[in-house]
Image (cartoon, rainbow, N blue to C red):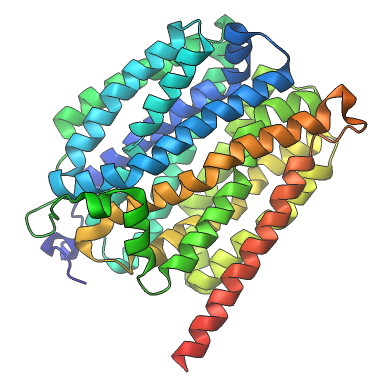
Length: 415
């Protein structure tokens, strides 16, 4: 695989990398702002119980994920052809308008349309990852991907905390704040964000590789990538239990209010940031990519099981930042995959990763919220709010077995 000349220059791309990390901080802040108040907003525009709001929350999340699946490779391929800069800036501009629509709407159907539009243009994360791949040597990819996750964690610390506080002024206030953040970030990017797609790595846009099915098929044919994408899909499906039901699960199980939900998300963000910024590189150096991935996947099995069974809010708060240790697996997986594709396909790969995650989470919100609804409704005959977490733990066991089988297969082929 070829590399750009700048890769060998000490300190090259330091300022652009700093900007892209700040972009991800603000991106995560925008998402984290609205999570604590989404149940209240849904009940405000549609009425009903908390369980019924959870069902609508699953529908909204599924619509968002479907659009991400369909358009992730399209936007990734567009960034390979026309550059990361225009994709990022246009996405931020429309995202700002989308948040404003969500802030003022009184219709659940307009809210659904807004989430669909948001899913189509949620390119900031995957395009930012392609930017990082553009400026990184192969050995730097996993640690730098960890930095992007750490930046996301910082935003997730700040976002839910502010969202929980703004929620005291009504469920719409955080959406206005998210719109302002996205707009300010777009303006800053216009003046600061450089372009990393040069003629050397520019790849013409083609619908054959831009549609999600063609892109996934093309990338999955590369050695080992099909199994790694499957591992990522199962992992993301299982872990979607957190965003799908956390804001509904914790009030029912522990009696938390909006501020406590926001505080718990902030605690997770702190743990996530510490893990990504401080532990990924030492783990990779000590255990290698395979060891790091297996540790993260196995840890998730135990953590999800614990959350499914505990009834103490204090223990849940203690486990919340600790749970971030499982995220060690993600940058290691991304690093392995990024090193297996050429420089002119990094945007396509990140688009495929986005679509793979989105495909996994198309059904996850519906499954997780329905399980929560049926395990907490009065007519169920039993009350088990943590059932969805136990299902996720079982899925994560399958994820571990699939990855181990792939490692063994690769070892046998190498002999």
